[in-house]
Length: 484
Image: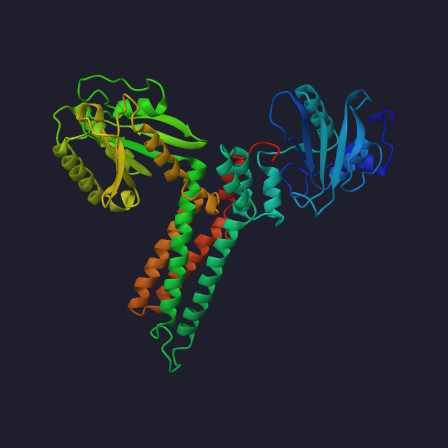
């Protein structure tokens, strides 16, 4: 194939359309502009990909190729700059609208993965009328053009950032629409319920009391049960994506810092025989079989302290545990008084903020079994899981690591999908409204029931983008990598 000389003079109307400034693409940000970006990660590689999307993508491809590209065909081409100097040789593929990732005309160029080559090719494309894409703009256009819903679009970024095969499979399930289908099924059931409630309000003269005959109450109970199951799975999906947030609590000198060091595999925390060595929060990120664990060591807890620094440390410890997915409550094995005091301290804090800690799982860690001469073991009791181990020798740590991994992933093989904090918050909001609807239904306040159901319906719609805010969209897609 001979070298294609480009940019010397306009050779066609298509060429003039992108080289004449007056006929170029509209101002950046307009709905009809054409975007381009390097889609492969920074650094040298065997292959680099430049992606183009928009109404002028096909025209730009024709100029680069020297002839109109065939749809979905890999063209071998020699890409040149404006004066005809060769940039590189590679492949060009054109995906006409609407059968493309974004729903627009899309062109992908595959060349050698050299940063200067990719930069020169991108510069040439921009000379021909495209502009540099914003982070996530390709996927944003796919969402706006109805190729993906918002939860699926977010799953694209989750799949790219997945740190394990389990997380990747979960993100792929969301990208395939599993999470969205569950949300839409719940919204559909909620919509049917809203129709019945509205009918009961609009036709009060009917002899049958629709609000009081039990059918609406039963339907609402079914929606709430379906919602609770989806919320639980979404929380598991969020932990799989964001990692498990674990907070170590316990009395002074129980071995909390030793446990953090043992799990981290390094001397991250200062360990001494002096009680109260840890005064502030110490954070460590772990990865267990590809699962992210955020571990936080806290100041020792006791009923009272005259030391203002220790008191502040305990206050921060209590605040941190409100955001924990799991507490590792560490006590010295055999110290029954310390165990009872720690249980009382945690119970007092739980009563002070029930909502924040209601779902927190507690694992009671009986440390220093090398001194008590008890064997390493695990027992599941009504107050939580109990583990006997020694942080300094490592005896029993394998069981704790396995417990952390299972807590983070759940039964991930059974079809876990990825979810984000935004999704969980929306589901929790919907759950609160459904609870209020239940309360209003019991007193026969039909109008208020209808309003609570409407708000719950909108909260669910925000997950998939059926109800959306431009501010939310901007925040979501700004977190994407450029070229996706």
